[in-house]
Length: 399
Image 1 (tube, rainbow, N blue to C red):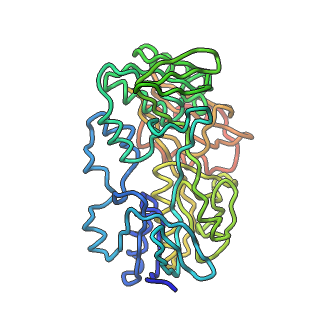
Image 2 (image 1 turned 180 degrees about the horizontal axis):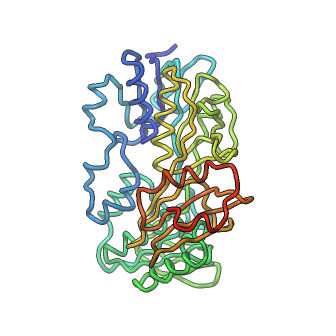
Image 3 (image 1 turned 60 degrees about the horizontal axis):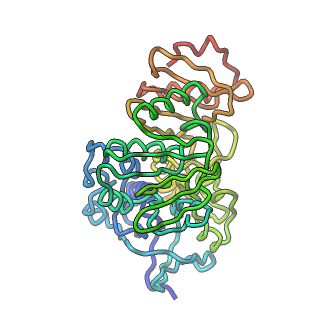
């Protein structure tokens, strides 16, 4: 017995959920919508949490997707501090942590992911910052002060950004990660070396090729032993080691999954009434002819919008190529497609860390990264969508 029913139920009050609610309302002005989120805050943009807020380029009030009044004005019920615990697909209803049953005609699972934890003794200490949410930012920014020793675990997207952010706050920063260089999973070797060297020149200590073996929390500080036998003492630990897609509700609903919720080109799951978008969606990446799952801002925004349209009856294929971006001190990049240091790369540099990198697989360009060059991704998308091979000389000066 449902206590309330909606035409559209969106689980996950992040960017994907907010984008879906907006898209639904643009097509269906009368259908009832509920947007359910576990956090106390309305939907917000996550990238500023590790970038602009630390640099003073944005304030907290700037990061919200919409004003709270927007949801009221568009007759969207915003149900915060609420966790959905189960989906009964046969009944067309979800159950919340308060025991409330909410019926739906169309359901979107936009629940994103949760941070992975460090699988070592002490890795589950609640004082470790598994950086992900606005509350994490608030707590960390209120905790740190000049001169503290911070250990950042992870050398990928979040780890590299958080190390730079904490350095700007005048903390003594150490990084530890298993790769040989910062962002070594995506940057070609020479670029990875350059960025790595720049971090060291700024005074950030780097323990590359190493991982924590144990974490001991004593008298407000930490003692971290590493697999190389080193001991690191610090006051703060921030972990940026990726996320795991949240698939519990998909399992509850009985829909197909791999490393994400399997959806078709319309972002529709194996149950036609249930859709998925954002970090938890395994979607057919049309331009590359492969299935993919991305954990990026642009993917959440674009997939949320497409899913919302399709829930409202649009039947629009998701063929967009989402991009991702980062800023590491004075080095900024934007990238689209598949970018892996394991792929062959053609580099076209104009000067010091300004240029483009083309990632090739089986003769085709599968991904493009522009470095300190912005607003060029449409040309990159055109190149990736080409089915034929591209010669190295054709790439010189292309972007």
